[in-house]
Length: 377
View 1: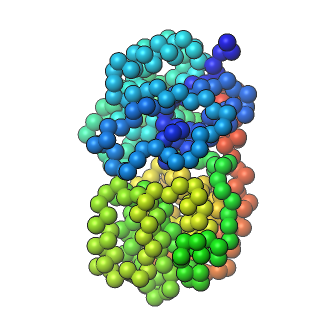
View 2 (view 1 turned 180 degrees about the horizontal axis):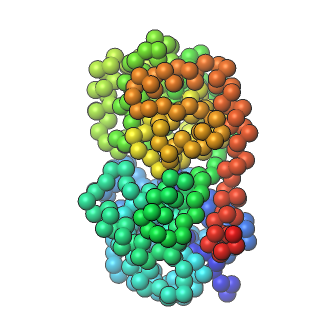
View 3 (view 1 turned 45 degrees about the horizontal axis):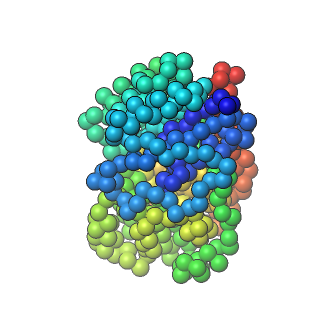
């Protein structure tokens, strides 16, 4: 049996969301590089009481040509021993653990404890310091870092943080654009299918709704001039991971009922195509961020992007001139969005995105990562 080059451990199919989708893309591109790989994912990821959404599973089809074992139980110690034995049996050269929450630290640490020492353990880190921190985060991160040989990332900001906090080798990466996204369709056709006004400017806020993403500031921006004096509307698309009443009350208080399209549910790829094709601008008014999977989505659909002044968000926007950067103040958000909705400005940003998309391929990311891990650079 041919030896496994890379074993990827973390959420992948049949789980939904950006972490799982990018795990699938990464695995497929390692295959294209000629690497022999396997993917282990979870049969149990979170207990139901810890998961705020409606379902953890996707309705999308399984990625073709990808061998995925659904075999890890994140909170069953007996399972960790079994997984360790299974890894020793297949003897991968490298294991890449997908690490985005300290809640996975105990599972990963114990699996590593049961595997042979000559197998290198690498962490692909999405977040090191959680957006909604808990008292145990630093403790678990430190324990995990003692078991990891090196790190790979999706942003310069996170790479810098890891270099400081772990003193280890870190690959400073970028967030690639998915290769399997649906094509852009005409704005007129997309809005007709959604029942959205065909003639007015529309700003899109997309993704899971959590406090750190700053939707409250974006809503207040729509109540501030010059945006409040325009015909622009705001499309809010995403499953709420906090009480929706908080935002419904704010919309009512600000008298924005007629300026909001509210779709409080998780968006699959088919509906994502409609939302992004309908939008004039994507707004990421986050209060904290390491990176965002919304930016590569916006690049694919050639949609200009407004981001707050956070290193994890603004780097590609500055480098590519693909949008504008604002503060977290509603007044500034209002002014910047109004500027971006001017037709000439929109066209300027779209042209720059077209020039930039080739830089953010999964093929290039995977090539750079394997060179880093295998010390070829």
